[in-house]
Image (cartoon, rainbow, N blue to C red; front, side, top):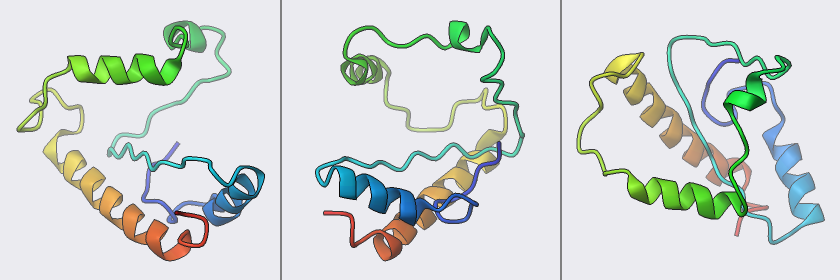
Length: 111
């Protein structure tokens, strides 16, 4: 698994967004970026993978939002980041590129 800005990868994001919008015009799409320098395995075929990543109880979105409000808002990067501040700067760059790309390439399916 490799991380990049939206539109820089090999997945046809425009076609997927158009298909999703055709099926459900009121669908919500979000951009989620996880940039880092270190490549990591995504072993979803390992029997224990989903035991380590269980589904949230009940309404998953409400559960995740509640969890996010429990955390303090950071004013600086955590000292224990695996890839450090350089990785966080890359992630911010990917977010900015992704937003510009989405506005340019997905405007016809975004409202």
